[in-house]
Image (cartoon, rainbow, N blue to C red; front, side, top):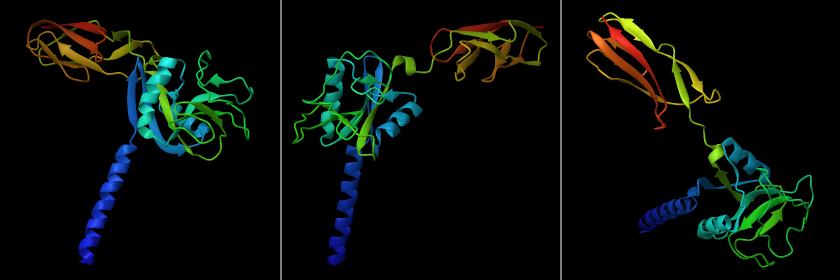
Length: 246
């Protein structure tokens, strides 16, 4: 009987662990062209700021009452958590600023906050009321010491990888004999800052020439066809090469 009870206690423990991990899984939210994600590993404010930047975003900046209302709708699901937000007055005491340098036009501090107690210069947002007078959704300042807060990353439209606006091939026309091959290459993309992108190659007439995923053209039969290299992001950006097979 002890073994039987021990087995079911083990099963119950595993189920509880799974439920807890699910409850504290990362959560993504889409809102007005912005993406937000909650992270529950406990970091310092500086560590959380760096973590968001390494992910291509930044600590959340709550710049309107509408944004505050939206994020609190999500945070209420995680009662008991405290989250770092992307504001600080480090180096400019009393002059709170967003990490993105956006204009400071909205704030939701708790009563008598921020108070700079203990050299606190990092912004937090609470998910439930605290006995010392902070209510759910209000902000408080905290010290950037050992990690005790979760954090929220935000990605703006400008944080998203830029798409290409033009493609140029190494050839705009070429003549091949049946059975011969030619490798087309992308010689230039605009803007030059885009280093990661995908393209789709296609032939207007596969009986004349085919093209594979790397731009290799193979002549199949006499005639003319157009080989197209198009951006894979549905941006309608493409380049062509006229192939003549003799």
